[in-house]
Amino acid sequence: MKSMAACSGRHAPIPRLEVKHTMGVRNNLKAIFSVMDRISKYASDISRWILPVLMLVIVYDVIMRYAFSAPTQWAFHISYMLGGSMFILATAYVYLLDRHVRVDMLRNRLSGRSQLIVELVLMLLLFFPLMYFLCRFSLLRTLASWASLEKGSYGFWYPPLYPFRTIITIGLFMVFGQGIVAFVRKAFQLARGEEL
Image (tube, rainbow, N blue to C red; front, side):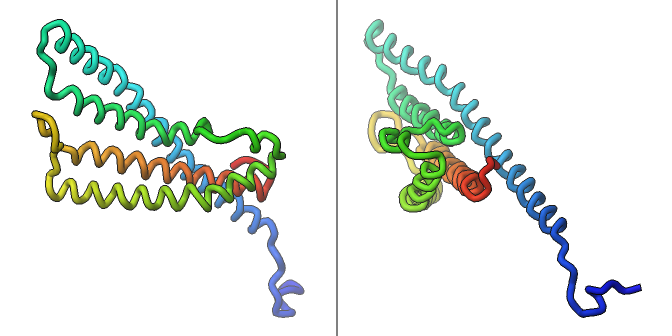
């Protein structure tokens, strides 16, 4: 026997299906964001292990320079590559933890909802355009560096720069990805009043 909705040619609304669909989208977003969060955490863990290596390089160079009057030719290049890699690989995780530098004088005076609105607007106006251009520029420089097998142009030791440029580009894309995740989370919190 046909229902009244089927006889009249109209479809009966199914609100539960819409709720299930919304929950499915929410769960999918949570799964995607969880992967991005784990990647940021993993990169931060790698960054943590770079620090002792960087310290050893610098201490070795100082000992060789001042104790034996035999400075290394490679310590400067290695130290800036390790330091830059350490910094950029940890940046996405810092963004995940929401520990990045910000001006809190005005922000702390706003309500929670107003803070979210200001952060979303600033991300749209500043963060996304800046990260787009940084990622684009870095990617183009990295591709050119790999194509020419670029080497350092100063000092006695000419180290290859393309691995370092690759790490910088990967780190910038991770920060951009973590920024997208943060934006969606903040927008969801503003719209729904709950965290994603």
